[in-house]
Length: 169
Image (spheres, helix red, strand yellow):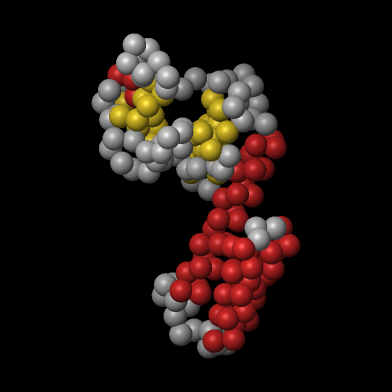
C-alpha cells in the first residue's frame, strides 16, 4: 500500500510495507529512506508519478513476462503501466512518518540556504554580510557535512538564522 503525504506544496509517496519513500531518478531502486518530492500528473486513466522531471522516469508497472525481477520500472507517462489510481484510504497517515517528512524537508531547506549564503549564490546575501559571519556559517556547514548529528544541524541553523537576523551590511 502507498500513501501520499503533502507538505509545503510538495507531495511524497510513501510505501507503508517497505517504510520508504518513492523516488524516480533513474537509479536502481524506487525506494529511499529520505522523503523525496514527487510530482503527480493527471492522466485520462489515472495519475503518473515522477520525482526528477525526466520524461522517461515515470514510475511504471512492468509486465510480468518482461521484467519479473523488477515489477516497477521507469518509462514515459503515456504507457498504460504508468497510470496509477489514487483512492482515499480509510487509514490515517502515521504521525511519525509525517513528522519525518517535515523534519527532513526543513533540514534540507536550511542546508540549501546556508550553502547558498556561503557560496554567495543568493542575491539577497551577496555583499550584504561581514566576511566573519559567512566564515562562521561556512564552518558550521562543514561540520554538519562531516557529521550530520542533531547538534551540528542545530549549530548550523543557529548560525544561518543569526546571519539573516544580525548580519552587518
